[in-house]
Amino acid sequence: MMSVVLLSLIAACGGSEQAVAPPEEARAAAAEERFLLTYPSLANPNGEVLLENERVVVQRFVVGPGEWEGIHAHPGNQLYVHVKGGQWSAITGGGEPTSSGAPSEDGSLGWMDPIPLSEGHESGNTGDTPIDLIWVTLKDDAPSAPEVDHAQQTYPNIPLELLLENDRVIVQRFQIEPGEWEGIHSHPGNQVYIHIKGGVWSERRGGTQGDPSPFSEIGSVGWMEPVALSEGHESGNTGDTTIDLIWVTLK
Image (cartoon, rainbow, N blue to C red; front, side, top):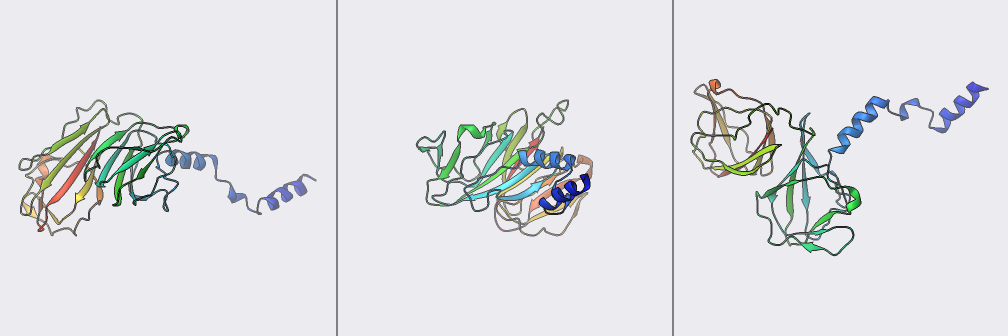
């Protein structure tokens, strides 16, 4: 009798025991989902995932004129970067839309603390041009290396502008003109780079110059591992357009 009941239950569930994920896989999926930003009103609610590793997930959203994100939550520990800015308005708790004021500029950014779904938060593009937005969401709830004295990225030949620093990130921006080189420098690792304006890079290591890289598109991103000063590393703009880059150094 027990076997008959068990077979009936399996048949009712589609005849396959694989429909339910093992508990450990379900917990892992739920943990990853917590860091994935979702805009329910957009055609692609999760945007485009540009980069994901054990430290961060980087997503890109394009919000067209008149589009609203839909009510959503934020996990916090998030940096947003406008690849292409525009006019935002916001709604909280079902109220009336409130304009953010002056349009956001290309390359402008900010830090987002947690917002629960219960707040009824959403923003919309009330301008007349698409807004191109990148979100960098940190997966660690605390600094990954609190014992390290984190410093700003430096280049001997090119100045960097400090845009934001808190207990989780250092965010800097620089422009490099055609023919310019950064100068030999190191990288601490755990860094995300974001192109506000792309271009053609070349690299030197130990005085040897490699082939130019493919053209870096606007909004392209990447992850930088540690590079020791002894490696003689530097990069240069070997194209014919100005490159505008943002560095996000994780603490």
